[in-house]
Amino acid sequence: MSRVLIIIPTYDEKDNVRPIAQALFAVDPTLHVLFVDGNSPDGTGAIIDAMALEDPRVKPLHQSQKKGLGRAYIEGFQWALAHGYERIFEMDCDFSHDPAEIPHFLKAIESAHLILGSRYIKGIRVTNWPLRRLLLSLGGARYVQFITGMPFTDPTGGFKCYRREVLAAIDLDRIKSNGYSFQIELTHTAWRKGFIIQEIPITFVDRRAGYSKMSSAIFREALSMVWVLLFRNALRRYPGKPQAL
Image (tube, rainbow, N blue to C red):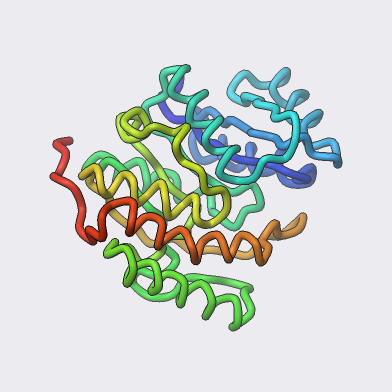
């Protein structure tokens, strides 16, 4: 069995699931891909099931309803741990995350517990975003840094690679946030536990098919979550005792 699993949440991604799987397998044919589908009304789930019958590297996980990004990843992480995967990725379905970056993550994870793909380290690498959205994302990253003390340049990014021991050490059922704040909460939890976290540069390209799931509620949740994390940790703004690799 592959030791590497790519977890991809889907909702109305019928035009993207086949191409993203093909692109991933072209980069590394030993990968496995878990699609966590939120009962997409456009038939995405049925396409994933057909793909799984054609190729055992494709794994379907169906939710009864759309529960949000965070719940999809939590269920995906729990599935990955139960099935023995050692390197576990978060990745978008819409090609905003380039499958060609996967080998860079796998090389970097050899010297860290968690690798964050950053759009803002060593310059700004974002394509096809309006200036307003870029400034909002940059400002949000600085806000998270200031409140929590985490030094990461892109705390809301969703292209990540975990060693299984990171996810195994976190009580995943206690992670309650769901949108961008899910990314902040999970990284902060790993950081406070002393896991070694590194950033590597990635290029982010706005989706080429489908539609964005971003909403004002997701943005508001992210703004408030940083204060929840700060007070949850008694105003401490520093990482926990370093964990050994």
